[in-house]
Image (cartoon, rainbow, N blue to C red):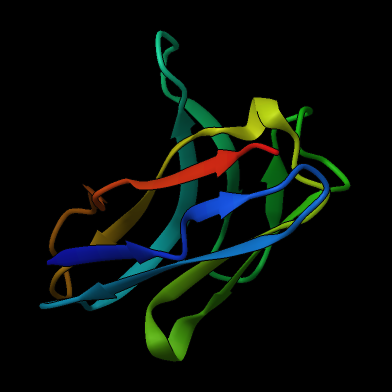
Length: 120
């Protein structure tokens, strides 16, 4: 199983970016999918998470600005980031809690990070 994240880049304060993370490989079902971020010198922190049925929760710092969504048919999770601030600068990581086969235990998989830089 692999998770491929994309969509990072350089954006000015107030701008927008959309991150994507696609899971591939032996996948029976994906439960929760999440986005985390890690800024230099900081611990990795949860940004947003979404259940298979679409229930979402967000870090207080991004509520009202970021929206997480997913396409179950494509095994893909998205993070729409609006009104970006310099403090949103970080490497963003996705993860997926999934089962590879019917009856197998659920495991957590991480994608590689994608860098988001918010700067004028």
